[in-house]
Length: 134
Image 1 (spheres, rainbow, N blue to C red):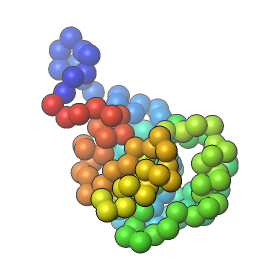
Image 2: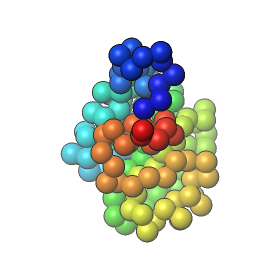
Image 3: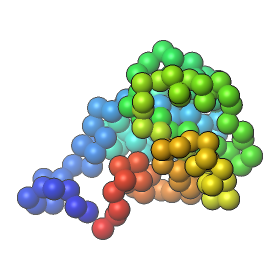
Image 4: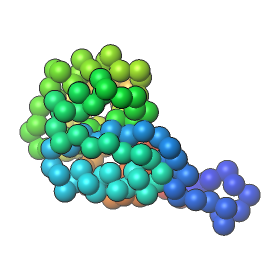
């Protein structure tokens, strides 16, 4: 992995998202906990929202540098969440969904990173950073 460090020994995984406030919105609790653990291991401070309505409330209450929205199979994106994302101070947005939905998600969330729910912890962090694994 290209870290920009003189040696790989100086690299710290926990520095990748160090101190970033992240909001994970996912109605599937076990998956939400896995996503949160991956981000926390990379240094993020994570707030969980067990659904889009609560996620919209959390966005209104706090400042997040990263919002990760994981959509279950046919889960629709709620208008309330879309309005709050538009009103929020430009957080980085990553949306995870089934590959067949990616085109529609790109149309809904212009500028967001759109990914697959099957990503492991390492791939998720690198996906959010926009860094390929080497």
